Length: 248
Ligand code: BTN
Image: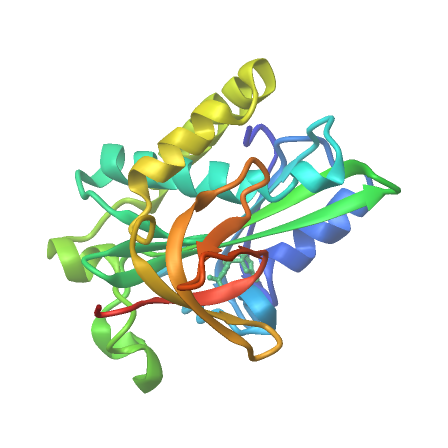
């Protein structure tokens, strides 16, 4: 991965750029990086704050030979790879909040967005977008993020080399991707679960339609869907939601 690197000073969004490149046939492993994104995209149509030079804003194109229902597994694979890479490059132990937020001491510093291009049920490309607050200072965050977001520099009190972290991430994704193709999702799922903070805890899941379900986060299924058991014992499959840990 990363044999073809597209590096720009500024882009609206590396994700959009990578989507266009993938539609035009860009090869697997193509990586798009930008110093600054002027309209970085987050999950559920949100914005992703991407100030100049402070973070890693990158999108990676992969072309696994899989069916579309397996594509969400790559969100979990990426999250596990990023946790491993951050540990290796910085020594910090971080955690995953389902489905794809990476937190350090409860504050988010990595967001992952995976999008899929498919023909009928066959995946043609998966675009993996990774945003990491590396050398961001607290005053760089907009007010609404100051209490919930952090960066590696804020937490470790030192400046990190972004290229080193990017290399570590590509290496970890590559090795988990190979393991996935050789052995399937099982090991990736175990690894992901070992980093997940919400499993076995009571949580609120706020779905995109506004419904809130309260229950015990039991685990994920083989497609990466969160399984939530409510107080009546019903199991809810949560495909897309924001989750919040309950204090009980
Ligand atoms: C989230 O909402 O948590 C996901 C955020 C993903 C942000 C990254 S930054 C690189 C890539 N380009 C984008 O526009 N978004 C993703």
